[in-house]
Length: 461
Image (cartoon, rainbow, N blue to C red):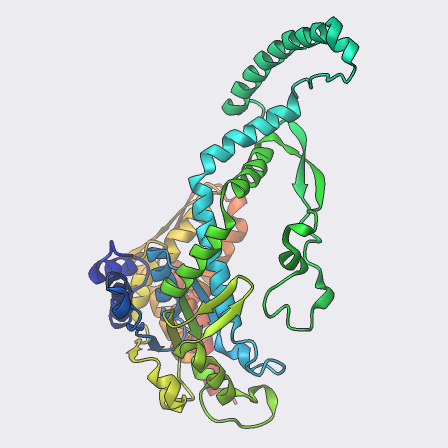
């Protein structure tokens, strides 16, 4: 996180998201402030709270993508929640703590993954040893309890014979290990023991709030309950992965992982609350919207800073960064309760996408849609090419359809390209001509009629 300046964060986001400079800038500053806060003395650090961000803009303009990309870029624990989930009948705000529990789970998963990569090489060595033990086990020494045998040396003779056979087996094991490392045994089938996770969760007490805490019986009793194991036949290639993961689990200290995970969630966690505009406004009574303001009041303490009880222990939310987003078509930001508004001091407006933006989205980002389709069809041996005029026309078609019907932002390009390349994708395995050029005529033939049809329907009674 400290390696990137706000300018560099914006530059990295520009590789994936077109436009929305103000939103990128606000997020970059918030991320940099976290790095600055970590360098402060303890007594001041505790007082510096994150500046939560409220993004206002129509759907499909990049609100979620900005938050998700920033989290990935800075390796921060990140979860996305829909505010509307908490207004459903039966929830009435009681489940809002789940967003923090999800964040802790994600944070612990990230720390665990990092720790496993640190011990990966060691775990692979141990996994190889276990596979060799299955393929060619060492002869166990015969232990005699008869004192006469021990006195008259018959046991010693047998032991010396065992030593000879053991040295032969060790030599064979050595050769086997070389073959294993070279991948010569990858396709051979062996039987290994794996943990039976299918029945590990017992839903005996579900309904008394245990599912809210994400707790199962195994977590409560820990190692007191024996872990159920089952035998499984797999290829040696797959067995190496399974066994190396098992060995890595044994090598890492889970207590340390949980401690670090909780700390990372508390200090660097990010929660993205989408569709916050759907819980704005007063209660209207009846239907699924019974608790809009109630949900706002339930979410408020989490954003303000409280302690949430999780199965790993208490987690403080004081320094978690919250980014809320909403289109605010029907309701306004002012319809949120004042306390919630006050908790989102940074407010950024995201612009609707223009025809020029659509053109850039098709070609500029690293994960550009046109590039994705070219890679997909290349697997069938087809080289897909687009002329500049065709790209202009696709952007125009997407923009027009958004204007004519519901504006769904950049997501409209997915719809348009799927329609445009429907026949090519369907016939791809049977096409002999391995170069397919999408030009202006092809786009006109496939798309513009569809756009005009949409336009005419407005005038039909």
